[in-house]
Length: 475
View 1: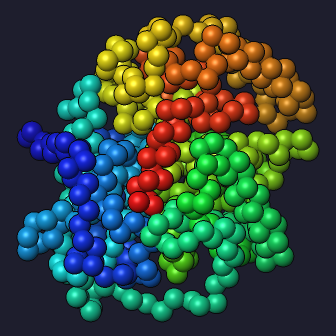
View 2: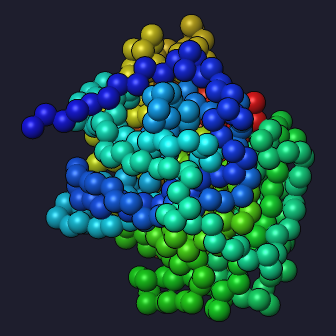
């Protein structure tokens, strides 16, 4: 049977804001559901609906025009059919579906979406990008499921008592919820005796984020709060070496078999804990010492907080900002030489939705063509073969050996020389290699916060994507 594909032609005509008070109350809906999936197949089942505190997002930009994320959900008024709210997002399940395990296994993932609390019954409809029928484009979605919600239902909508004893620290407060991006930092693997360390880590990561362009320019557009979460034991799980901890949020290394990839699949517990605090973006700091982190668009970020050895504190700074780029602005990984667990994350012939990756190599078809000077050749030549040979050598290093950092630094110096090519420093072009793909995938700049460990800012294309997202939250 042919699958139905819905084409959303995103345009600013859709962005005409609804009158918030006409359609919504000041509160927030938390909609919980399960996604049951295998490779190329999935279905959704209902879990629960909650009424939470004040809506923290924009009350004017209610419709998403950025066309980001592997998924999309819409909120439509039942009586009039009017589109009231929409947002793009990505999921842990979507990444898992690209791994070997998904080839012959079904799994269930708990997920959440949030939106302003409607005054009247609505349909919430979920869509997924159709990789089979979107060759060369990123516009097509297929409908997965539609749910009916009556906000006046006093039986099914949960309004449970929230614990007023939670401890929240205000790190940076610049103004109202609706006109600022509200970041909530939580910790995992911190014991009661380690709360001061959590406060210090949260403050440090906040300072680091706003030292990097373009976040440094828009510091006054953000609020940052830190919520104390106490674990019974210090540290988080490392399944590959049989280390298991009683950490409250369930974060662990070895997600999808990658030693450095940190996620939690205990979404329900996470949402229950943070539900009393207003937030747009969630970051999880893990109190452990293995290099690692993670970030999924419109879900959360994770980052380790204990340097492997003295002098490597800068790795924490890099990971925190890099992963924030994934979660906040939907930026893709621009590197292609590091090992990942994905089998076919970017199917051949399908244009990535991420704003900083493309398969297009014709100037007029490149999504960031407005940033490329006429004098810059497309594709843009760079010393890729030399860079690749250094990266092959770096991949052979044993991260757990005593001389790892000495050898790595020698190789990093070589790559820095290559990536500091004066021909292209600070310029936007079309550089081959990105998104875990060595050939046929392109990134905007020679180096960027999304590409290497070098102390660089986001390139102009990534910076513009971040600025667009800030505007969506704060306009």
